[in-house]
Each structure stands twice: as structure tokens, then as C-alpha cells.
Image 1 (cartoon, one colour):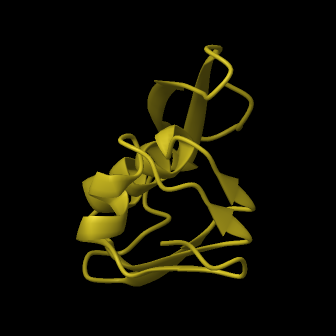
Image 2 (tube, helix red, strand yellow):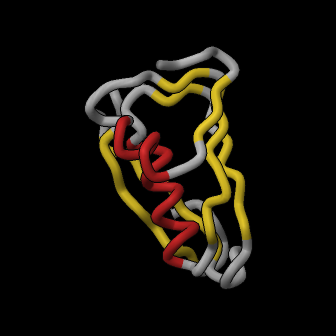
Image 3 (cartoon, helix red, strand yellow):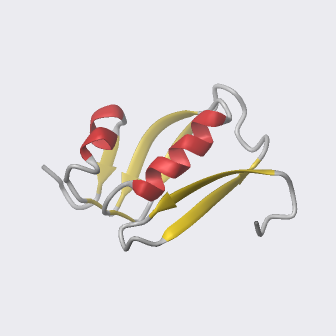
Length: 92
């Protein structure tokens, strides 16, 4: 609700249990555009999944996910299985 243009919005619950939202300007991603998603630390993947939803809903293709760390758990395994994920700190 902070951007002064029309946006797509995805709500999610973060690793602390707080409800949050990400917004992306409509038309920011062109169909077929390859996007590298960069997040600093992925605990549950909720924020990354919300960003991916915004990208894919605008027709973008997530080329990969990069982070300092990606925790491996039941929440992040689907993300790790579906996308090319790389972290500066190795994960199993």
C-alpha cells in the first residue's frame, strides 16, 4: 500500500508468525523475463514464495534463488526442489 502506482500484492506469514505483504508494480516484469530472486536469509521460504508468486503472476520466469543462507526444513524443501537455489553458506 506504499507504492503510488497500481500493484500486485501477495500476503504471507513470516517465520515469526507475523502477517506481511509484498507488492510489485504492475508491468514491472515482462512475460518471459528471467529473474534472479535474491534474499538475504531464507528460514521458511514464505517471503521468497510470495516474491516468486508476484514474478510468475506477471509472466516472469524465476531463473534462480540466491541467499546468504537457506535453512533446509519441511517449509523450504519444495522451494529447493523446484528452483535452482544457491547459498553462500552450504546447505544439505
